[in-house]
Image (tube, rainbow, N blue to C red):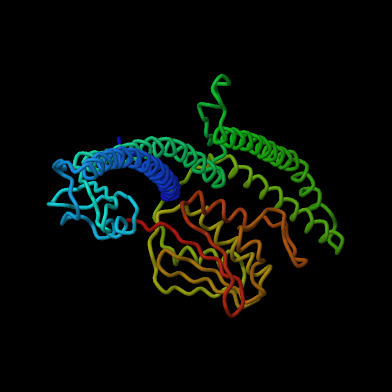
Length: 414
């Protein structure tokens, strides 16, 4: 069965296989050298003893005047020069050399007249034994290394697959899927040994459960507060309409309207948090829709249509996204504010100080504003949530020459 691994897991498996291979090769080489040296020393020692024994017999026969046995002679022609010089200096020695096309063990010693008495012993069998041993060591080392690497890679692959599964779940959680869990089988069975990967998986599952519980509690709290405030605010708004005209009345009505807007925004965020929003899809002309949004906002916003496009979208939600972007540009930016339609891409740009660094890096965060800006920080959060419901991509950046740029990329109608 072929295992499909991600790039990082493949790199880890390759590194582990390379490490195992290097260690196996080093161990096999060390053992092979030790066995080779030991067997070679033993074989050469036995052949040397045999040659020296024959040299001693030949020396006795030569000194007694007897005929030398075959393989023995005085200054034979095939005697290696170093061994001949050693014997001429009055010493005995042995040496392996090739003689008549086969390996031969020579033993030589001095005789009268600075001559060398030498005997030869056939070394072919011992040489073949050592060569066969070396070949066996190579074959057995190769098989052992191959088997060890396969077993090691299999074991590492199992670990990397579990690590990859854990990383995949972590990415799903970071993307907002709080129901994702690793569910490592080892964490479910306490009788099985718990390794480090199982510990990481259990910690990730526990963290996801805790995070999900806290977020659900926060969402329920937000929804409950918004629902509870809605009824008294409705009555307060009706009461404010009955107040006599004047500056105090205007202030009261303004604050009541701000509270109602905040409550409606909280309710909308609560609905987005549940993930149960349903689209009412229709085909819309993007340029015409953008013009309606700008007119409804009552702001001085320039609309530029480079390329118009027809998109399949929920008109109400798209108007909400563009309306929030335009309102945010006028509230926190500086004129001129330009809304540009280029195919299925809509950009809203102002010429103010730009978005805060945290917003560009991590996206809008509810109830967070900087620089003394007015508002509750929910406008861009709602715009981002509605864009996700539409299947669009909303990104935030700062222009090189100053100003904030919000880019909404919509799916194009077929």
